[in-house]
Amino acid sequence: MDHIDTLPLVDSPEVFGLHPNADITYQSNLAKSCLDTILSIQQKDSSGGGGETRESVVQRLADDMLDKLPENYIAHEVKARLQKMGALSPMNIFLRQEIDRMQRVITAVRQTLTDLKLAIDGTIIMSETLRDSLDCMYDARIPTHWKKISWESSTLGFWYTELLERNSQFRNWCFEGRPNVFWMTGFFNPQGFLTAMRQEVTRAHKGWALDCVVLHNDVTRFFKDDITQPPAEGVYVHGLYLDGAGWDRRGCKLVEPTQKVLFTAMPVIHIYAINTTASRDARMYQCPIYKKPRRTDLTYIASVDLKTNQNPDHWILRGVALLCDIK
Image (cartoon, rainbow, N blue to C red; front, top):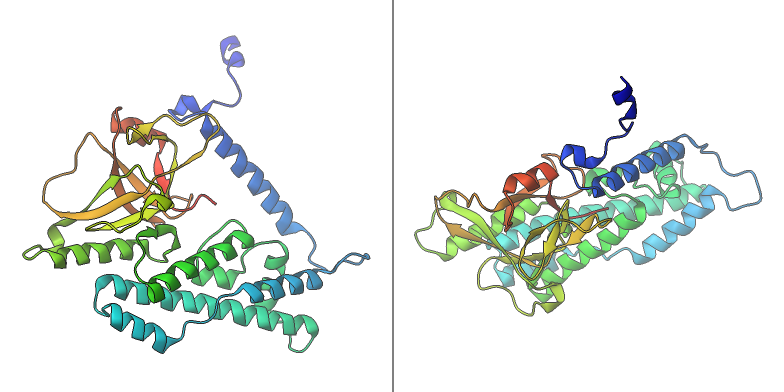
């Protein structure tokens, strides 16, 4: 019993085979959870003092967001561009689906912000949905009905910045031509993007069957700005972060993470497809890619093979994964 009394009350992450950085993540999540609880129980009434009211803060924010909101996609212009690029190409069908979903988000945001301004002025009645939007925008959270048709993010500011960046990628792809490097985080359906790429490669090779075509990858030594032309086959993707491990850019392999560095930006990854029935190389670590830090089957996209000098089991125990977004 005396010996048990000497044991620490809180176990270090190494006990579970994790890196010391895991403790930073735990403490951050604990602090965020505590602050979210405080925010959720604060009073929602307008301020009675001489300061700015909740309504005037949100009205100013709504004006600013409406000024920056992208223009709507004009259906016949998008259709004409896709016809020119090849409307039946798998990648262009995927682009059309993504643009349709993006337009839905832009329409919802514009409608809510316009109605919210009218409701604050007293022109229309403040509905339950608008009241929720007002509370969320004041607390820098994403309104519930926006989140349902879009994506998760930690704050409204990050979410809105991502809306502008996603829209920019779709608009450039549609009206200026296919990009050399794709930002995988910016897709509603990244699995569909990789499937479209597999279909494209399969059609380019006579006699290949889609069932036998599997994803393959190479991690390059380049970052997005170093790429000047697309690959001969497959796609270049950027914007992925390695969680739980570090990356040796020169040796192109997994290494132990640096102390207090939680995420490592990955170089551009070349993802392509090959026609094979052979099993994957057991010496490589099959690293899962997730859309968000919350790892569930709903946010899982695919797996890529990463080189490692250690046994892949070491990285499985560490919980190493690639994340599209670290917010």
